[in-house]
Length: 233
Ligand code: SAH
Image (cartoon, rainbow, N blue to C red):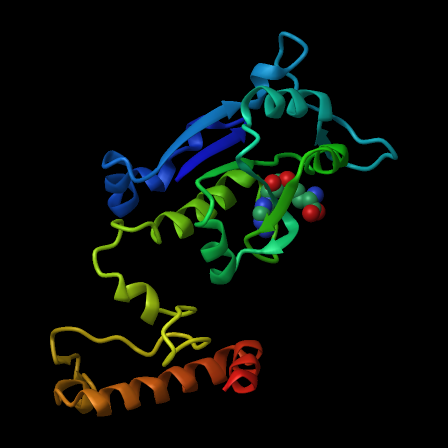
């Protein structure tokens, strides 16, 4: 996968994606990125990219002419163009699977109050949100989106089963449920024991126990997911 980031803070990349599994995967050529500094397309020598908004109100807006030029000069026609935005489609695991079908993704990282609306109209842009809260810029949101895609690329995570069994995974057993509780060594810690069944080696019972726990966790924490799960099963 190839990512392109349009940003006024190119040094924020690769950030956490330079470490651990994503970092190794980049070294192995499984994904790559480039940054485009929107300031390089400013009209003045100060590199101004923002202006006060028409209609009044606090906060600046990223100019359509400057950002438009950065897009025109750099974003290829074959790339999927995304604007990280709190009013966008929510980034869910389903959306992540959808995005991993793309080979080239260009991401506009907003700053200030956001970008001039005409950019969104002019280009075929999908707005994507990482959640119902406001970040100070789109860079961290873009890294979140990239991370969630990169870990699904073949060869990034050793055991592919991991994807299927984790929360929001595709495994029929746990589909639509949050993850069951996890345990590892030691068996006895601060007088707390690992549940007996997990030590039994009895796979059928273990599966049953995990499913029961996954249901409990989902029901008590996420009524929205629980309702959907009940409808689908
Ligand atoms: N005025 C906007 C918030 C602007 S925050 C509003 O009220 O909706 C500045 C930039 O941060 C945005 O342009 C966007 O690119 C990014 N951003 C903030 N919160 C985000 C979120 N939840 N998801 C994705 N991007 C976000």
